[in-house]
Length: 313
Ligand SMILES: NC(=O)C1=CN([C@@H]2O[C@H](COP(=O)(O)OP(=O)(O)OC[C@H]3O[C@@H](n4cnc5c(N)ncnc54)[C@H](OP(=O)(O)O)[C@@H]3O)[C@@H](O)[C@H]2O)C=CC1
Ligand SMILES: O=CCCC(=O)O
Image 1 (cartoon, rainbow, N blue to C red):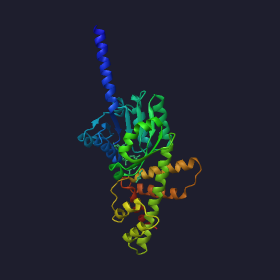
Image 2: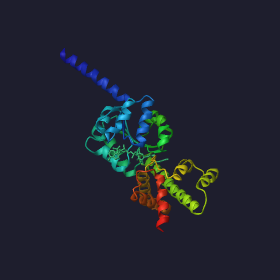
Image 3: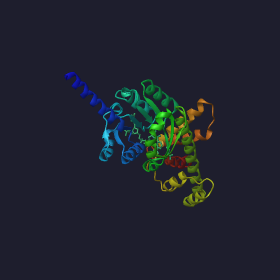
Image 4: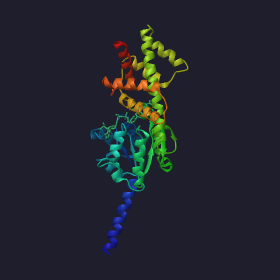
């Protein structure tokens, strides 16, 4: 009799645990993007368990209803789906493979969605590890910066397991204005790097144009007005131009991450012999900016490097 009672009690506990697991969403990485994205998920009613390497950054999320997981493994144990938004390949790998990492608690049925900007190799390593333990994997890097993240207006570039993509649509509907499913793992990473390679090159051309206009005795504000009315008008020039001419580089997209993306995009081209001299020059400017201590500022601070090059020539 006692055995039956114990069995029933254990079964009930398991069912409750299963129900809880199904409702909870995990979120790893509460930097500029992760904090905004996790906030939106919470505000839209998802039950969130968060983790950040610097644990104090969880406090603001706890104030609006999140629970904290002590480690990435603890978050995955509790949640059916876990989303990650981490700085770079080394962070993405460390959170999965290190002690107390994601992999320790991946079992059949768990879904892991990495939204960090990384390269194909990183994403593939993570995908293989997760799926070999019976888990499901989706890479889903995003286009759009701090404000679109706050406004739930990101563009999501997903690839990997189609079934997990379908299950993740309720999250993506909160986080973004549009999501693309791009096929096999790696295609999301590749697409994201192509987009950011173009963006980084454009930012350099824009910076050079601002310097050339200034040195030619033209008014920078008037240049912005002219650009905004012509064929090369775009949201980035419109958003960043006014702050750049005030030398204001409050970080929305940290320059060190843009340089990481240029580096990874150049490696992507290198592997398939695509020549990208414009991107290579832009990467040099971002590297120079990092060496000048500008890595934590917004990527538009590369303008300072372009200005600096004029002084030293
Ligand atoms: N900002 C933007 O406009 C956009 C950024 N992205 C991409 O999104 C990702 C996140 O960007 P963003 O939020 O701006 O970056 P932040 O630098 O603001 O945040 C980075 C996050 O990664 C964590 N992290 C760094 N290293 C490690 C590590 N070794 N182990 C565990 N966690 C680590 C940080 O933790 P801690 O707080 O402890 O440092 C933090 O949570 C990047 O891949 C970026 O390229 C994509 C689109 C736009
Ligand atoms: O990866 C960062 C992208 C920033 C943006 O799309 O504005």
